[in-house]
Length: 368
Ligand SMILES: *Cc1c(COP(=O)(O)O)cnc(C)c1O
Image 1: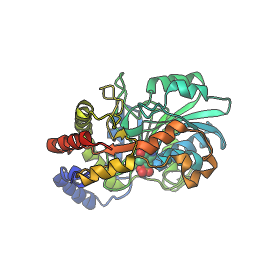
Image 2: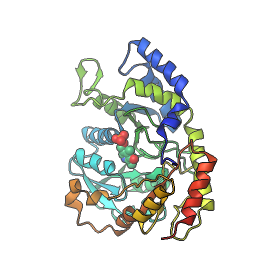
Image 3: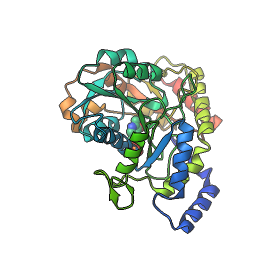
Image 4: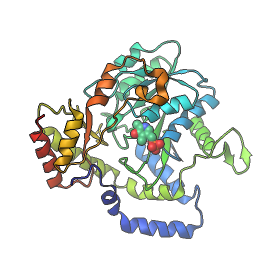
């Protein structure tokens, strides 16, 4: 059986270093916001090319804290409208609502699965105050044009970079440095994954960085001095130490994923399987390799019967979820068709050549 994602195999590569790190962590006696967190925040800011990185509890919290920080700084107000791609993981939408803001759903391009600046532009009104852009499946979303558009209309841009670690645009700028503030998730299955929950905020805005840093820690910068109403959303010290080790391998891992993707794009040739758009550059880290297939259930079952695990990201769009029933009447046909037909093929930095070849062979023989 070819696994969709072999997380143990991915992490087993670092077993000796991880065990040593745990020993040092144990002996440090400093288990919250210690040396590991400090080092990771410095290393990850440097990696993204931003001035600041603040480690937080997870990706959803990273997004929520960014919006709450802008509200506390008076740059956003409760009820303000935030444009967001309709075709995203529900966490993007949840963050906007949790912060007391209003999501406005916008359709994607069916080829890239991401939205485009030209579409966003048509939806900007006097109520629009921010844009939450998502680099879905690891591919950067029209980043320079979105930045330009936001500057022109005086909007805050936030990146949901939870799937885009290391993705880099044509000017050498990476995810996390393509907005006013970005949210990362280090959920175990992400390209940079912890062995538990973790997340981060990156930004070049010093005031925002300070506010985020306070908010995640009871609203306090100095022990027992609370300057704002905060929460406890700190990154776990052990996870930060693990991420420091794995960060060194992120670029080679992403390159390995792109190699798998290039093979798929070159060798899968089945009219019934629509391949994703890829421009061949580093602007995609191939967190996921998503194809569109008309009869999804049959295709998924066929793959499994032939020894290939797949997955679906995602089976139901956010606006059709019960939790978001107030948005269920929205007309979003492109988003709905993607959610109906999308299938994620196995992709990871530890896939063997024979596994890649087998996936290609099985997909090419599919005929329903
Ligand atoms: C994973 C993910 C999140 C949430 O991150 P968690 O760490 O699981 O909270 C948010 N947005 C997108 C696009 C994601 O893929």
